[in-house]
Length: 58
Image 1 (cartoon, helix red, strand yellow):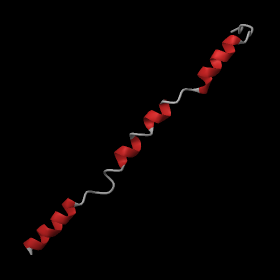
Image 2 (cartoon, one colour; image 1 turned 90 degrees about the vertical axis):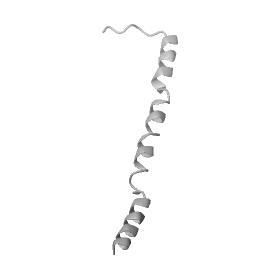
Image 3 (cartoon, rainbow, N blue to C red; image 1 turned 180 degrees about the horizontal axis):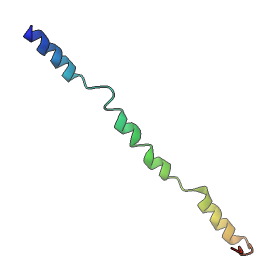
């Protein structure tokens, strides 16, 4: 009986939980790419400087 219990325990420990590995990779990669692309507003600012506009009263 002890052997059967140890054999089952070995199988359980040999197989890692399917929930552990997928969590870190899903959260790691998406963060950098979202911040990497430059904002389109920055490029528009350059165009605004070239166009003569009246100064804001504020």
